[in-house]
Image (cartoon, rainbow, N blue to C red; front, side):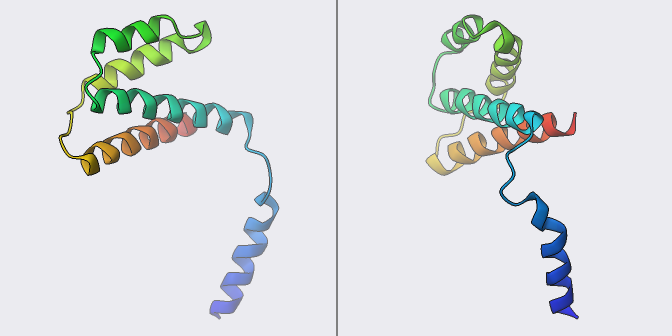
Length: 103
C-alpha cells in the first residue's frame, strides 16, 4: 500500500518538476530576499537611519516594500548570538515569502 502512495505522489507531483516558477513566485522570492537582507543588516547593528536611506533610494516599484520591510525588521529584537541572528534572518524571509504567496 505504501508503494502505491509513493507512485501516486510522484504522478501528482511529476508535472511540476522542472517548471519555471510563476511570475508570482518570482516576485515572492524577490520579496523574501529583500526581507532577509534587511533583517541581516538589522541583526548586525546597521543603523536604522541608513536602512531607511536605502529604502528611500530603492527602485520606485520596490520603495514602499523596502520601507515597510525595514520598519518591520527594526521593530523586532536584535539577537546577540550568531545562531539566533541567522534564525531571525531566515524566519523573517520565510514570513515575507509566505505572506506574499498567500495574498
